[in-house]
Length: 145
Image (cartoon, rainbow, N blue to C red; front, top):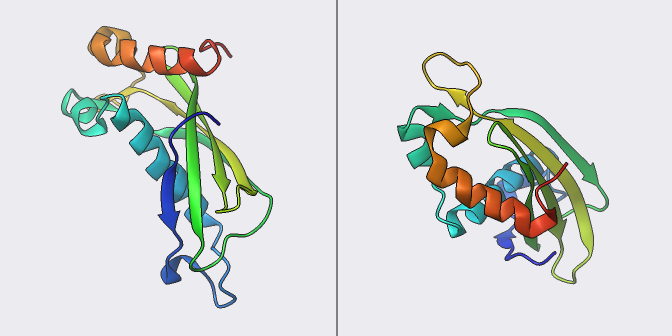
């Protein structure tokens, strides 16, 4: 993947008694990497929420290849695979220090109005963020599903 990873050292509390990372933590790491990716491009979720826009997760998946363990240094990669102003989809990879693929995953989100909880088109509410997210998706695969 040709993006800057979010680097994370596995903490003790993220592992079970065997020292293996609990599966729920990978979803948290996806969020951490997703937040870092868009922040690098000038998109801050706090600013989006200040405009009355929320971005709930509507789907998430995680495929485990091999386990991360307590103390491991992992790199979490996030890519914006699709964006159309209403929905967006990210793809993720978690890799070990040796580059070994440990986990792949994806998440899909939509934009909703914070008050009405109804879907909205971000192009109408925040066109400047739309442009940035569109460029980010275009860099990956043309932004097409």
